[in-house]
Image (cartoon, rainbow, N blue to C red; front, side):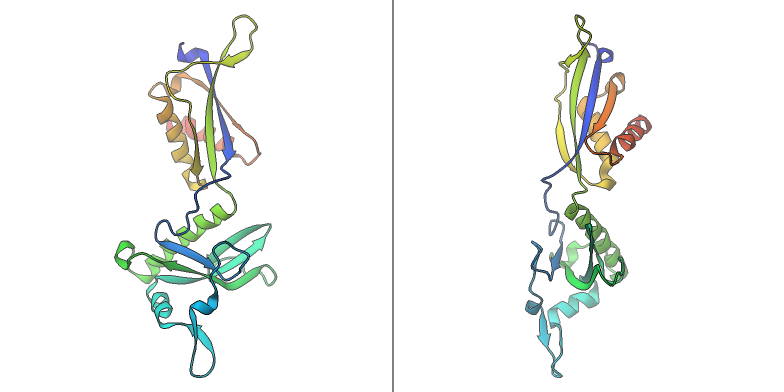
Length: 217
């Protein structure tokens, strides 16, 4: 069937079972709250000083000094937000300060940035993405193909010469890549199809994808 006679409906949805990014690329976030699945007992990384106070053990202190570990604050008011200590919302009621720890757990040579400041930027990028995962801000799409029935004029499923994919795992900063993947799945004649984006929830993703669809073209 000619592509111009086919309408593609691209349905956008929240990905409700994305892979946990925590630890995948080397950074791993730990929470000091046993309500969280990334809980770590703070007593396991603290030691008592000669004056009776507690602080990071020698290994952790070395990581903190070299940008291989950072204290984390945790904010929760409806949704949650993890941030490097002092950088997120500082609410007296909803923010827990030094509520967790972000640690680089691979070899130091595997971390591209070499200065503490550059490592801080890399750590921030990770913890922002981890927050998006915690809040379910991850999306996917399903492509369906329809054509007009000549007898009744209603839409009916149509056959196309490409696989109709259903793909997820796209973060908010990956939406442009998601649209490119849609076109790659459709093939070189993607522009010949009439396309409509639909979303189950009104979070504005359909409008964004439509703009990117036209822009990338």
